[in-house]
Length: 136
Image 1 (cartoon, rainbow, N blue to C red):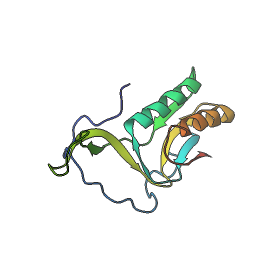
Image 2: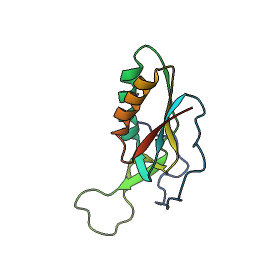
Image 3: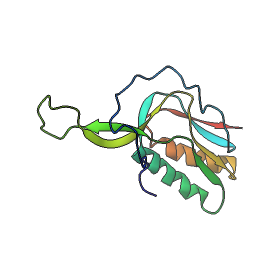
Image 4: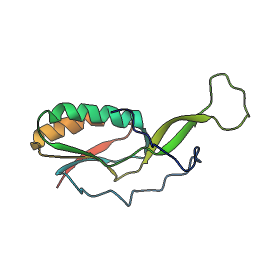
């Protein structure tokens, strides 16, 4: 699987926006028995999500199911190196998901608790926020 990004977007470039305090959606386990929950506010890129997903898949081996509860659809722009001030907004560099405290990033099912915890512990190192492992 390649880096997560939308197939089509309504607007090519977005404004930065400001993050609200805490998440109101996606805060409860909906599919699995274990979840990785965000405790901070940051933008998570498609690359970071993909790296974490790969780490978790190593632990799944022949059992269990993984759900990714977030999708990076926010375009992040970047200007080229040594470009002078002005000249408008840069081109889209990558896509991100604005993570807020309380949001569930991943869910797992069909694994023993200790294996699920180990998988999430390794995946948590790939994110720029503190996370918490929760269970149903």
